[in-house]
Length: 273
View (tube, rainbow, N blue to C red):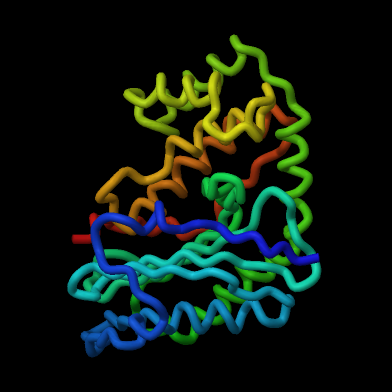
């Protein structure tokens, strides 16, 4: 049965920018195309996502969007549910981004949100990005459909990954070793090392007191939550950090990680003002 539990996105959209609903997205004017640059309405990404979800019995159950003050940049977070299959510990979520100022591509990333704490993470297998050039409206439905088809195919695989993490015991020295690797690979800033260690040793959520890989994962993602006055772009910084986190933890649990399927084009990420 579909879970009725919901992720709390407030932590991830607090601070700078303006939080809006779909009506707010629809009210943002889209600039006229200029040369090969072809901006698209922010709401178009949401509509295309919904179209891609429908054939797989997937639907949006929670959604939050943030705009910068000028409405040029949009970051969205949406919880996705399956009408017949629910998960006890987590739900899939989709991050969306779009821009009207030539500073970043339209993008989508599929991640996981843990119910008890609303911690988010991305494994990196389902990520798309498309520059705002003349064929974007033709390409976007195909890209969305491909990403969501992959999500539907892997709906049950995530349970196996979570179970593998839970069944992998982690000793004190091994945990410290793994946290050092994470700090070295910029999963979290080195200045947060002791915060993460303390969360592991004395978790604020009693559900995470066991000494296993799932709880180590949770102690890290708890400290990756955005700080006060963060911007919507924090979600996309989280994407890279948690992909590196999984790449460290997966081998410990005997899981083979897959490389992100994303264009080699590089976005210029900037803060929402």
